[in-house]
Length: 425
Ligand SMILES: Cc1cc2nc3c(=O)[nH]c(=O)nc-3n(C[C@H](O)[C@H](O)[C@H](O)COP(=O)(O)OP(=O)(O)OC[C@H]3O[C@@H](n4cnc5c(N)ncnc54)[C@H](O)[C@@H]3O)c2cc1C
Image (tube, rainbow, N blue to C red; front, side, top):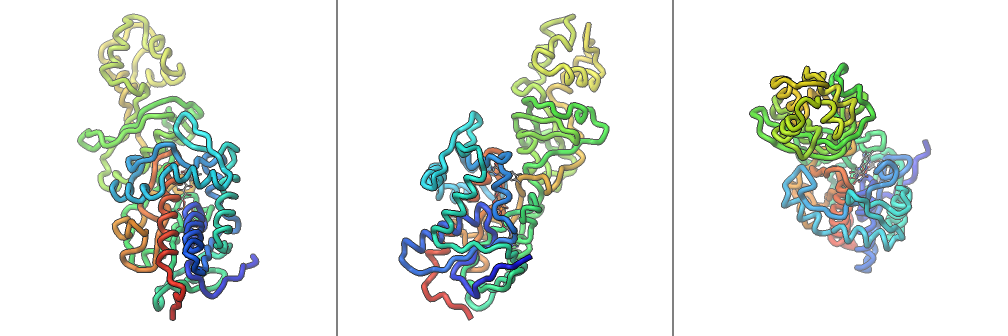
C-alpha cells in the first residue's frame, strides 16, 4: 500500500479522523483562523478510506443527532460531567453547523435527525470539506502505533512515519466495528501515556444472544414493541427500556435491547446474578395482564391476546407457560402465562460482540480530563474527544452528538492553547 508523506511536525495533531476527529480538526482550524495565528493542523487516520462508520451509521442515512439531548441519554462517567461538555455544543449548534455546510435535516417521529438527502455521504462530505476549509490536512492511511511524550510535546509513530506535535487530540474511537479502524489501539495509547481505563470496557448497543434452542430465535424477523427490564439478584428494577424489539436468529435486537445491552454487560461484571426480563405488553403490569385474561372468561388466551400480539408469539408463549391457548385457563396456568407475558426471564448467554456493536461502553474516564478544554489532567498537551472517552449514548443520534460536542471543545481549546512558537525538543 502506498504510504502518504507526513510532515515532520504539526502544531496540532489529531489522531483519528472519524466524527470527533473531523470535528476537532474543523474547530481547531476555525479557532486558529479567528486568532490570525498560523497554526498547522494535521489529522491522521489509519483507514484507507475515511469515515467508514459515518457512512454505515443509521443504516446508511446517518442519524446525526436527536432533537432533544440531555445527559440522561448517556451512560458512563457521571451525568454532571457529560452535561457540562454537551452544553458547550448543543443540538442547535449541530443543526446550524451542518446547515452552514449545506446539510439540512429532517426530524423523524422518534426525534432522530437525519439529512434530508437520506444519505450519510452528504454528512461525511460536509465534514471533510469543513475540516479542509479550516486549514486541516487530513492524512491517511497513517495509523498511529505509539505516542511518546517528548520534550514539551509528543512524538507520534505512525505506519507512514513519525510526526512531532506539542498538542495531540486523541480521537481514535472505541472498539466497535473494528474493521472501520476503531479497534481499541487508542485505549492502549491513552494507557501508555498514564491514563487509566474503566473496567470493564464492553460492547454497547449490541444485540443479545439466547441459547441455540430458544423459542424466541424461531420468531426471527418479528418486530414488536416490548419492554426489557434489568433486575438485580434481589429483584430490584435497575433499568428498563421500552421500544421496538426485534427477534433474530441469534436472540434479540432492536432499540430496546440495544439500549439495555451495555447496562446488562456492565452489571454482569459486578454480579453474575443480574437478570433480564421482557414484557411483551409494555405499559401493562402483571396485574393488568391478569385482569385482561380474566375479563373474558372462556374466550381462551389466544383469542384475547392475538388482539394485541402476533398469533405466532402468543402460541409460543402459551407453550412456554404450559397454558392452553383455547378454552378455560386454569388459575395456575393463567399465573404462568401472566409471568411469561409481563416478565419472561431472558436466558441471555452473551452478546454479538464488538464486530456488531454500535458503540463502546467504557474508556478514558472523564475525571481524568478538564471538561472545559478536554485536555488531559495527567498529560498536558494531550486532548480527547469522542468514543475513546467513557461516555456512550442510547440509540438515536446521541453518540454523534457526543462526538460533535467533545470534538468542538477539544479542537477549539487545543488551538486556543497553542502559541505560534510551539517548538519541542
Ligand atoms: C453500524 C453503526 C451505526 C451507527 N449509527 C449511529 C447513528 O446513526 N447515530 C449515532 O449517533 N451514532 C451511531 N453510531 C455510533 C457512532 O458512529 C460513534 O459513536 C462515533 O462514530 C464515534 O466517533 P469517534 O470519532 O469517537 O470514533 P470513530 O467514528 O470510531 O472514529 C475513530 C477514527 O479513528 C481512527 N483510528 C483508530 N485508531 C487509530 C490509530 N491508532 N491511528 C490512526 N487512526 C486511528 C479510525 O480509523 C476512525 O476513523 C453507529 C456505530 C456503528 C458501528
